Length: 189
Ligand SMILES: Nc1ncnc2c1ncn2[C@@H]1O[C@H](COP(=O)(O)OP(=O)(O)O)[C@@H](O)[C@H]1O
Ligand SMILES: O=P(O)(O)OC[C@H]1O[C@H](OP(=O)(O)OP(=O)(O)O)[C@H](O)[C@@H]1O
Image (cartoon, rainbow, N blue to C red; front, side, top):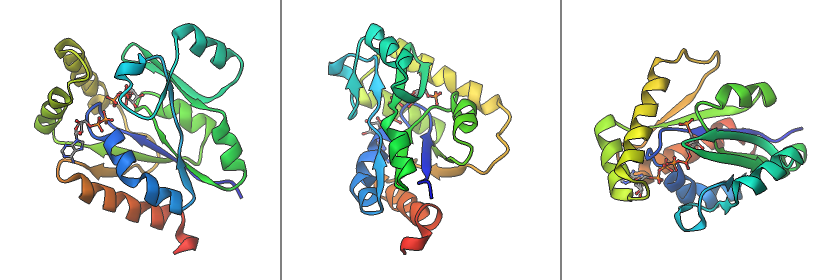
């Protein structure tokens, strides 16, 4: 049987990268691997365990079919390596750091994916983006404005697990791992 695909989404600054690092080892023990993204972001500002490539190299890889999923947002291109499909075919699970805007496309390609939405209270979000200091103020404002698009959007016709990260990261991480145990690997517990 195929493995399960966990599709993590959430606003920039909601804590997706932090959550991933907090649960990476526990997920590995549950046979769930975090897929490393390919991003056209400069190596210095990558800020996560991702492979940085030029836009030309990204296009070459996309045309060569090297991505299972790919999308563009915030002026960047993102790809999930096709290695993901090999893992799923052999019954192993994967977690991807995905995009809210790309969810519909991802559902067309992977109808059984499990969507997870990481949320944070609005006032906390801006504070965290400023504190992270990876983007300019202009880029931060653009990312906050982008969130309005998703508030208005009609919801998709399947359940989305909403996980709040307004409080302690360790609490959100424990909550997430519990959800994975119940929804992804119920046979193993
Ligand atoms: N629960 C939390 N409490 C306090 N700070 C957090 C929490 N989660 C994340 N952060 C901080 O908020 C900022 C944004 O988190 P990050 O993981 O980069 O978000 P994302 O990947 O969703 O953009 C980082 O500086 C991170 O250290
Ligand atoms: O459609 P959206 O849900 O808005 O997502 C758009 C992109 O932004 C995030 O990536 P990125 O790593 O660049 O940003 P972040 O680390 O600040 O979340 C997310 O992982 C998507 O790749």
